[in-house]
Length: 406
Image (cartoon, rainbow, N blue to C red):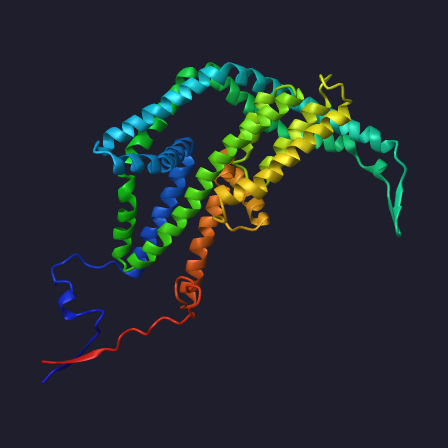
């Protein structure tokens, strides 16, 4: 009689045959993983601009998926034809919007980019002149003397920090205005890649789950994927809606007040909605500077009064957005502390420029979800927090080995 200890998790019938491919050793696995990671990092650095377009294509297909699925469920038309119809409609809308607002937008954006350095310099000079006429203020044992602040040095540092931004912005505008062929090629490339991604997007979740099935993590993948999808869907669609709303409201509001370049300022406000926390503050600051240094206005207000009116308008818009629009459109999908968002925006901008700053918030939120899962796995806790009203328990012990008698 032979007694063999066999685990239920590894039955005898699942043993690999003798002539099968040999398993890799732990050293080989580590070397392969390191090599793959290095190759990925090198490819991302080598083809940085291409990766940016691929990311935009993926985001576009992800954003259009609900519209495509909605039409697909309610019609008998093939999904491929629906995708072509949706993308053609989007292309027509973009071209129509370009011809409707393109020339005026380019002109006003160019004027705004030209004015910004002068606005910053004049603004710091005005503050410096005002403060030099002020008397030192004593608060308790402390004496505040603003006249000792080196405003000229601050101005030079600000202009030095913003000079790359101005040069890049001018380059972008000139590319869009003169390099039409390259711009059209990039747009067509993004559309084509996005179209093919949209065709296979419904199967993406299944691909990930099947891949996770091999090491036995399919249940975890089925839980993680919806959470990550919720973060990205709520953020991207919410920011697009908020950006459009802010663009229209700021444009109309500044036009009614008589602020110059109101269309460009509205466009700037809408685009900066994609930069959490810092974006609205920057767009409001630019609008206030433009109003303060505007030569005249039809309301007959002084410069500071006109700037104050713009400040009040921007504050009202931001309060309505934060207290009414954001909770209804975005909700608590990100659930991040503002400090984390700000740090993420700066790190994203340093690593990947404008696209990194825009995608910093959902990336940090995704890392938070994955980080919580990893933390709980490291300490042998249940991989996901328990539902409300249930107690958290430690994972069950593996099933005991059984004795088979041959």
